[in-house]
Image (tube, rainbow over all chains, first blue to last red; front, top):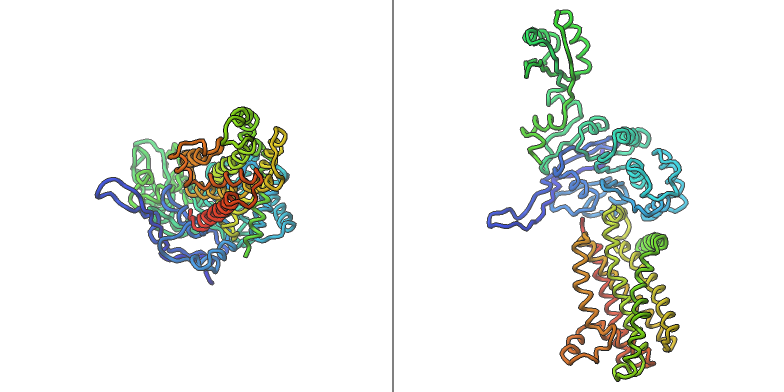
Length: 325
Length: 253
């Protein structure tokens, strides 16, 4: 199966003006990224702010010239045929793509015309896309009059008007309220399910990557530090953390009982609570609680903590996310 | 080559947006109109007693105002581009297969059309206030506005795309446009100036363009002044458009 996107050694180095004899003259925003994406998958590019996600994305979408490396995007060589790349991909930028004063329908049709699509065809397609994305009745409204979530879905409609096989979404749910985010994820998943579109998203939210992505690429300081399915990555961190609150005198017994009930859980006492690890905390919980009750231990409280990006980071890079900022 | 088709798309979109917000079009015309109506009559008073005016204030003043319209009106369009950049529109267009030069040309074409309308209104108002010049000279005057506008608008977009910030663009424009305007004899003919100032202004192509239009308003169609004015206008247009398209094609991120 040929990959729909492949990069080798993609890099971007900026020259900077810095004071001081020994100050660095260049900054490596992206240091040689190798990635492969198969058709029909949703791939997430996960990393903290400043990791190089957007820079890599803009290189792949021909908006930024790479200083090194090669890429083949939807069958077109990035350097030799950038126009071919542009024809085959959709890109939805983080900051938005529409003029607030423009009318929704007109922006869609004008955008389609830049791809050589006939205005009548564009109109029909645009209306169908808006309807698909829960944007009924906005055709004649000004882009600026839409809500944040609506505007983001409009941006996605713009990115899809020419029916690309590969779509790039840069931080699609940043700045949206929880309801809009969940709604957006539903629509992104449908792109793959209903249309077979390959989706490449960048995000700094673990829950977004978890909910949407078939595969995740973790990027930090311009390099890919890990790659895998969400389950694989969480397993590397150790999985979910289960926290049991018990009476202090029961703590030791709880550790023993839990170790027997949940394999490889490494229970330990931490600040008066019992912490243990499980690949899927939600699944392990019922039998764990039942087992503890049978052993006569009174569990006063329980919490299941899913690994966050910070946990993944700490495990993979030895640093906390916040230190990296 | 999709250049023409894409330029037309960009042009029609820009025209539609401009027509919905005519405040900028009106604003752009306001400055020269105010000068015409509020300053012009003062010049009439001076003109009758000063040889440099050749006896007619309007024939001297209106060409200057037309060039001022072409220059100032067009130079500030870069701010519109920066605003489009901020809302993500420019990036969105750059990700399409559309010719990057068309992103410039479509917008410049819109600016030229707006200037033609503004120039015509200015000329009609001047006629109402007492200007008398051959009709073909009026046409050349309006055409000069449009062509100069193409040059300055193109350069303004080029600079705007490079600096991407209003704080950087504003001082740059003001710092360049004002001295160029003052050294071109917009309001008063440079012949009134001391010799050293005249020599400095000779290096300014806009001075010669204004002199050319003034010559035509007097009826000299074939004089070297007129022809030089036309030639320099064409040079500026070609130069401005070349610089502009190069920046739009080369600029990455």
